[in-house]
Image 1 (cartoon, rainbow over the protein chains, first blue to last red):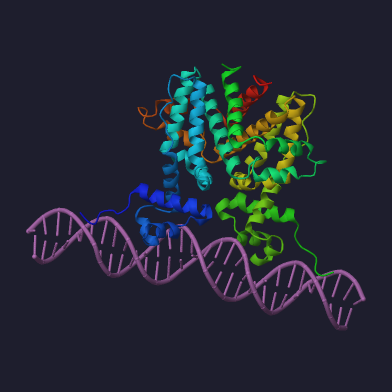
Image 2: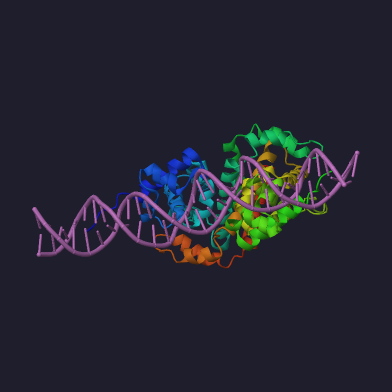
Length: 207
Length: 207
DNA sequence: TCTGTAAGCGTACGGCATACGCCTACCAGT
DNA sequence: ACTGGTAGGCGTATGCCGTACGCTTACAGA
């Protein structure tokens, strides 16, 4: 009947994401997003209740980019979980500034739940059931979330490593030595290596 | 010579922590901390450069409460790492509002580095060396960090579980079923269970 | 007792989220 | 073609926030 809406949720989320990618988390404000869209600040409030909902939209937008189709059933369950973990890490890692938001809003995201659903299906296919499956899912999620953050908020590798390598070796002998090794371990191998540990344990003793 | 300082860093950090515990992260402001200390807002700036440094102090305060002495060498390396993980989780979990800050500032914290140092020592004692040790430390850290956040920012167990249990079962069959199991798995068992997976993998195939 | 230094305070500014009320573009029914 | 009502979009104002800057004041050494 009256004037039609001029914005889709996707367009809104994309604009906010553009601001995030350009100016970082600190640069994300209702004003900035409105400007990005060429509309007034208060106009945004026709589409979201408050800033938090805008953040939720961005997270949903980013997470909905991860493919949650079960990976080719020709491969082992282990490889399938690795694929799922990489997909999540890649999608979030493509927009480092949203990492903190992802943590806060993940549990209300449909796309996030779909990811979990697929992982649960894979685990079930591997014969993991009941409480053990609960713990496995949660363990995987914890690891992936933690790893993404470590990678993007002061990692053991990267520039942080340099600082660590300069610690007083008498007080931090292991850290100093480890930092030297760490420089040679790329982020990808670190991520997959830790994941492999987890999967070794998952497939091992208990099952 | 002139007027002596009236505040210690510890006292400042405690005041900020009190505000955090009482009013949450959103309630933490320079004004609020100043009021907590009975001084003017700008007086704080004699002790910290900016808000970020205040946050750093709080994180350091919280992390310095974790005992980083190596646990009794009578026990297995596995038990020792479990003890270290629990200590970190307990210290941070005692102040849920600082969880987000911990992530942001962890890598600049002496206490955090000491924790890593001790864990590295334990790993070394278990015969884990070189790049494998880098990956093990990072994997453990990722898991613990992720698990703490999952626990305090919308966990799979807790109130989130109820919402998940109400998902449309036709679209989320595994999630619905898992949520029912999840309600029976306490946070502690979840944490230790996931950690056990990781440790199984760490002690398994590779070593 | 006097004086220099640093502690602590008050004011002010710009930016933030957002409540509220107005104007206006649009579509439906006539 | 005209008009009425609805909802989109905007401007203004309020009360937070962090913090720059300059003043006042308590203290320790002389």
